[in-house]
Length: 168
Image (cartoon, rainbow, N blue to C red):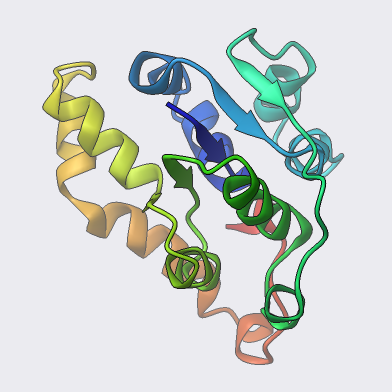
């Protein structure tokens, strides 16, 4: 199974201490170098920076060989999202793990199979890989959505400026 991940799902899974679900569900996961760089960014939470600095063997950094097409370049996506979508297309990925709604729509428009952080938690819950607390979190998408919407409704967001992923 070929699975590509963007920055946000890895960020959230590290922060809620559920990152080990990815190899349990998929074996290995690919990320483009731009996603690795975003996870290493000085503005990233310290646990995320520590995790990526000593990343596990199941995480494979793989650069896309193609550049973004015109449609992808005009989409309001960051470099990690662009590159994850391109890499998913190049490798004919079985799934792409991405949370940003615009990025999800673009991936779906390209006929990629999309999941996100909540989807990972739901899949893990269905297999009994998470404890009761995480099962409740996985079943109540409102918890995740409310947290994301809080930052999405900030004054800066209303001016169409994308918030830093670390403010989400």
